[in-house]
Image (cartoon, rainbow, N blue to C red; front, side, top):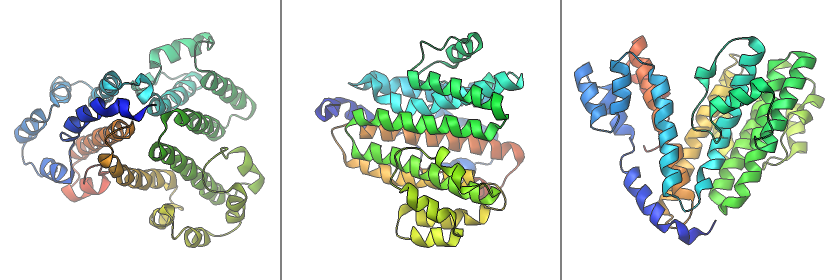
Length: 333
């Protein structure tokens, strides 16, 4: 990607960035005392479609997914390189594949869990998967589907299938990011791989899995050396935290170490990692030429929509303002 070609697109993104919600906006929204005030607040911030869905008794989750898909289309339309959204879209392609395979194997229709922001429409994935006609898919995605289905027939282990799909997703993203000519975006992919490796390592320790199983779960790539990960597998989490104390993952692991017994490790690591990612992407605000501001905007918008989802859920179950704020991921704090 030629960086100078992004000058006009970056100018458009700067306008959109000003509309992103920040911590004070969330505090204001959560602190509103009536539904009327809440409706007016969202209307003023271009969320009329979300309000319409709520008012008509439609599924707000579906509306939020459609809003996300429209943001992807918007960024793609203003970018000099349409494939700007391909990298981020891959995570939804593989998420949708996982949902549809589990639906197929479980005999339960759960296409409602698919996200529309992928590179392939979920309806196309579902149709082709049912027909066994995957030749029009990206090669790595089709090979992943075949491997996941075959592996499940052998051992009926859904966790093994999750590893297969996640490994392929990360490997595909690492291959795709090379065309972006961006250290910042590549660092984002490498961080996702490292986080996945730490999640696999700690989860395997908790379950007591044989160390030899780790090699089949690791992804080629990432900054954490595989031999080092194997050594850490034989040591307690305190040693891992100490070894990574001076890295981004040190504080993250310390926060999440108390969730090991509860089985919430993956969720905690994902939450903490996203906060770290969004903080790092603040560097994109100083870049005038290149894909980084467009990429950063989409990740920030994703976080915003997740936060609105959490706020809606909090309102529905009667959570306090403090409880809701604690669950939010702050893209623009």
